[in-house]
Length: 155
Image (cartoon, rainbow, N blue to C red; front, side, top):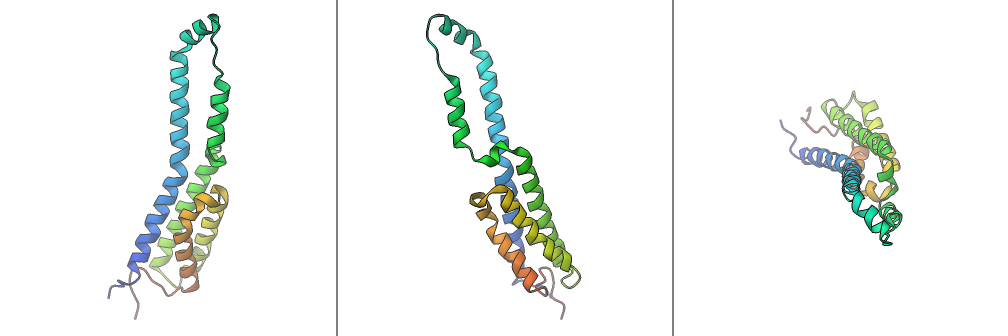
């Protein structure tokens, strides 16, 4: 017999974990691309900047860099921390999904999943970690009620 009442919870968990990974990895990738684009265009306009400097016109590019640095959260300046947080989110979601296959035997996976999600929230910051709140609540409820089997109900 199919367990149709808990299957939407599994879908919400998987979608929330995928969104969490996307929200963690996408900003550093976009900011790296914009930095690369800024460097390429900086090289292209270098002769004109030199000529304008000879004419007495100068622009301060360091102020633009400080504005760009001030607008980005601290997570964007630490791509390794973002990669580790994304790995924690993915492994926590995988542990949750694997624990659903055998509800009584997967007690360690049910404990590890919320711990990894909390560690990822700690690495990302609370403002981005709010996205993972539904997944964390589902993981904690699966820890509290281990008989909650997402795939089938053993009666």
